[in-house]
Image (cartoon, rainbow, N blue to C red; front, side):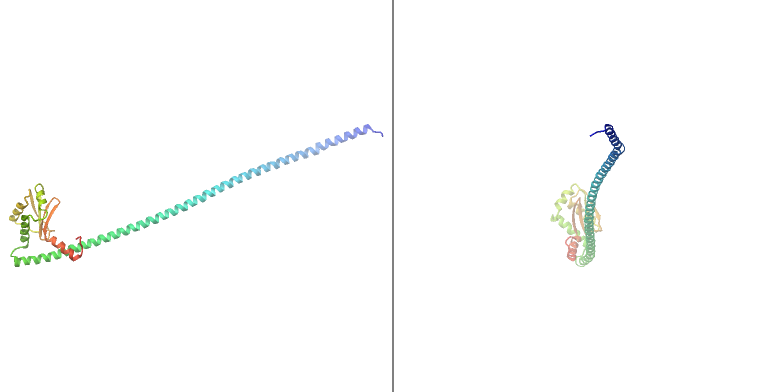
Length: 244
């Protein structure tokens, strides 16, 4: 079998030329395009991964914000409920306070009316009683009521049976004594009173708030001898009150 060397060499050259041409114009561009395409795919995958990570981050942030919002909403609701309860309690306390004030004002008004009525009763009954006593003393006693009351006071003071007389004597040694009466006291009676009380200084005054009688005042000590005391008891019996 004869082998033509020239033909073999030509075939080899043709084969290598075909391989070079294929590699130069086919395989290399195809591989380059495949590499570029793979890079593009990898870039898109990386971008997608980054976007997914960013989306997950935003989702977590949105979840946190939603949680914060729910927490803030719950706190606002609790605060509103607490504020409403506090305002309700304050309104209740204010209403109770107003009711107490109104009740106290009503009580004071009733007390004022009661005292006024008691004073009116005392004054009217006292005037009637005084008028009756004047007539009785004029008809049967032969003297004036004021003079008789004064004589009775002097008699009791002399006997030492007057309540508070010892304390009055002790205070009168250093403090002034004021004798207030509903009528003018004659000079002779004044001398008798000065002698009995043995005060360092005595002043006599007319007082219109005394109902037929007199009272002796020395500092915060007061000795009363008048129809006022009897009228107080009478007003208590008439009005039914114990603190007139």
